[in-house]
Image 1 (cartoon, rainbow, N blue to C red):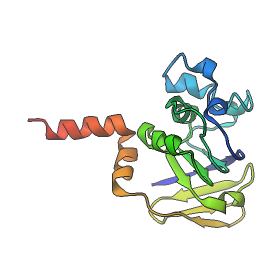
Image 2: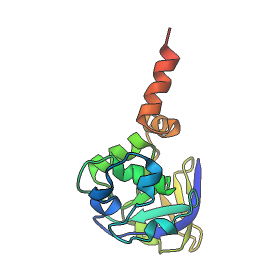
Image 3: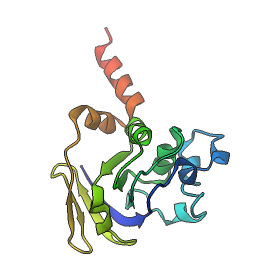
Image 4: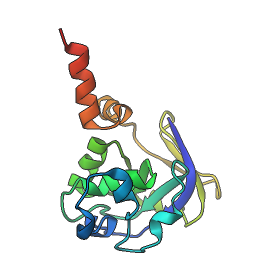
Amino acid sequence: MRYTGKVLCLGDHIDTDAIIPACRLVTSDPAELGAHCMEGLDPSWAAKVVPGKTLLVAGRNFGCGSSREHAPMAILGAGLEVVIAHSFARIFYRNAFNTGLLPLEVGDGWTEFSEGDEAEVDMEAGMIVNTTTGGQIPFPPLPADMRAILEAGGLAPFVQKRLKANAV
């Protein structure tokens, strides 16, 4: 799988309230959540996302705060499929996979990006390339079970697929 797009950058310790404010948790509709993604930081942020053509790059401890699954759902609903970060809060990291959002931890490699850079994520090669600057950031391959969950679109579709395959 490959993901390409323009980079939107955020800093360290972006919490789930910044990703999707608590007042917006009256729905689980990804499109509605996506319209308010990062509203806690910048009310116009979601309008900067071109669905399928934008990559989010952030610093340390992305997704800290509450354990709400609405946060990765909002990111997906805004049209993003990948978040590249120095590191993720543990529960956000797992919730990302469960909802079908790809979280890539790259340590200090995140500093290779500036707002507006173009980038490409090559899952097969385990490489993120900043096509604006030529910088390259390797990442370890995802475990097969995590890839299968992402390819299914999240944990619920993965389980449904497995149950259907095992039905008598």
